[in-house]
Amino acid sequence: GTITGSGIEKNSYQTYSTKLSNGLIVASQDLPSLMSSFSLLVNCGSANEIQSGDNNEIGATHASELLAFRGTNSRTTQELLTEIEKLGGNIQCVSTRESILYCVDVLRANLPTAINILADVVLNPHLTDEDIEECKMVMELQQNELPSEVLSRDAIQIASYKGSPLSNSHFCPLDKIPNITKELITNYRKKHFVAENIVISGSGVEHESFLQLISENFKNISSNKDYDNIRKLKKFSKYTGGIILNQRPLKEPFIKIALGYEIGGWSDKHFVAACVLQQLLGGGSSFSAGGPGKGMYTRLYRNVLNKHHWVESAESFVSVHNESGIFGIDGATTPSNSVNMIQVIIDQLARLAIEQVSDEELNRAKNMLRSMMMMQLESRLVVCEDIARQFATFGFRESPQN
Image 1 (cartoon, rainbow, N blue to C red):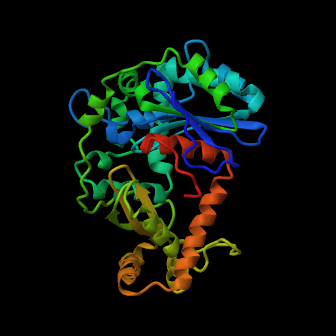
Image 2 (image 1 turned 120 degrees about the vertical axis):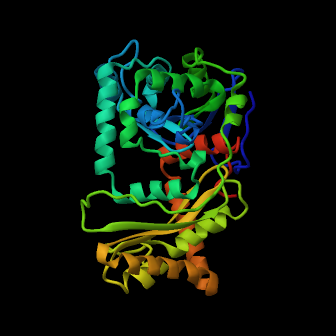
């Protein structure tokens, strides 16, 4: 395998990576901690799901997330959760349009057992009919109970890339939930859960011992030397623009409105500039305790939340994918002020193009972005996820200093 330091300073903890003979990438960074975190990232998500025909895979990613830490061939669900608890561990699984990420945080001394559990969960799942039915119930509850901002961000994604993979609904549509079967999930996993499509990362681990544990526990992982052919089947997501209206009974007295524009993907030369712009606009909800670092000097706080009492929230966002991304503003207000809210959002986006940004405002946004990034990287779990996502996207990890 190959080992790289990714340009990190000699005195800091380096990021090491090794590519195993089966194509599995193992990357890690040691940290001074009694705890260890490790992640397994599968480089596929709802954008990879087949949307039509008898073999459609709609909802497979959503279901895989909800069924992540269930029983295996050797452990029942209760036995698995009890074992994790005794190890002093925390587990989670999150999915996006382009990835499924399993995360485990555990006492460093219990790392070998924890890795064995994760390998068992990924390689030997034993899904029962009861598990599938419970999963469907949770899907239905989520559609009715998810926060409005989550659904509005999903809706703007669908509107932006109509008819292409990035417009695939991330949360399984209500009318497709009955089609979720054990066979559908199993076939989806068999196709994408292969060594060539997986990155395993660790933080707070010594690389050579971590590598040995991964090699031992994942020696039976499926491999597909022709997986690149499956990647090529996913067509390019072209930005189209459009409008989506998501109507449902209001659980709070506010409607959510989001407006966005296309930006480049992860490798775009303007990506960092878009992130600075997001910090410059900032925003949040109408209630804040204030204080340092709360972004109270950002444009959306000063020009929107402080001036319009009817605005419940106004926040800038960046949603980035491999080939494209979206930059925009979403806000919440009462139904009677929906037209006013749209006008305010358009006004703030137009002012970015019309008014020159002052040096003070620009430097503040840059410092906020640096501060946020460095504070995030103080977390072991965030470092672990960052390593996995960067290797899956770029094939290496860029130093924070760069």
